[in-house]
Length: 324
Ligand SMILES: Cc1cc2nc3c(=O)[nH]c(=O)nc-3n(C[C@H](O)[C@H](O)[C@H](O)COP(=O)(O)OP(=O)(O)OC[C@H]3O[C@@H](n4cnc5c(N)ncnc54)[C@H](O)[C@@H]3O)c2cc1C
Image (cartoon, rainbow, N blue to C red; front, top):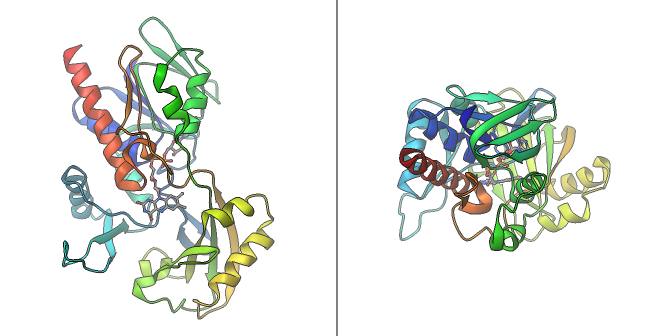
């Protein structure tokens, strides 16, 4: 039996696991994906390389900054561009990305962790002093403490299999956490995109909200490759449309901004982008059941919120374990 099992190899789960491991706690991470990083995702198509989930991250809190500084020093991430300076920050906030894609941070954190990929946790059982987690491949993982970092509706669906009252009066607040749907269209081009501002192009009042040039970003050096994000309304409306309908509409909206023609494209659906109404605390903890929930549904939308939630969950566990 291990001390802690973390479900989810996104930024929250991996930072939580890293901090625990650094403190000498035995910890294992499970993820249903073939890769790691969750919504910090990178993929290849037509020789191009695309970040199709989170595009960059920012840093406000010193506790996250120290990790970011370490990743910068290790050459894992780089500054992509800066937001316009403001009165409170005359230099502008840096926007960071992985050197070869947003998954780089997760891969770096996984180097020193025991991570089991392609393992979907399908049900959980609470025994007298442990959790047993069964996965889609039939493995059973036993742990003293369970940390679930999947998007909140998925986390609750998993915990519901336990038939244990895991949240008491907080269940309604947890069930209320909702996320926007998302849709990304990835396209290779026959020449430079022509996008200004290092290839980062936010768009207002349109079916699309964002175009990024992954070549200018530095992750698709050989092939011009753009990522286009739809608005939440468009994603909802076209959730079940064929790619040649929704992709074509998004490319048509993007064409006003692009100088080159599309060679190849594909669409990716995101069931969870950003939490609309995060839980009011940085994590959920049931100390009687040795259960923690963390992720951006707790720490707040964006990579930094998820990271801070994972770090906060690790501190709770370290306090608990040092008392136990
Ligand atoms: C399209 C899009 C654009 C975004 N843009 C930005 C941006 O530019 N900047 C920014 O800061 N943020 C952005 N975000 C949000 C950011 O990606 C998230 O806030 C952050 O990555 C969430 O991290 P997390 O660890 O909480 O969750 P996740 O990254 O979702 O990690 C949860 C993990 O749990 C795994 N999992 C779920 N259920 C199970 C199960 N039953 N068994 C095993 N594993 C399971 C999943 O596979 C996943 O890897 C964007 C998100 C999307 C989708």
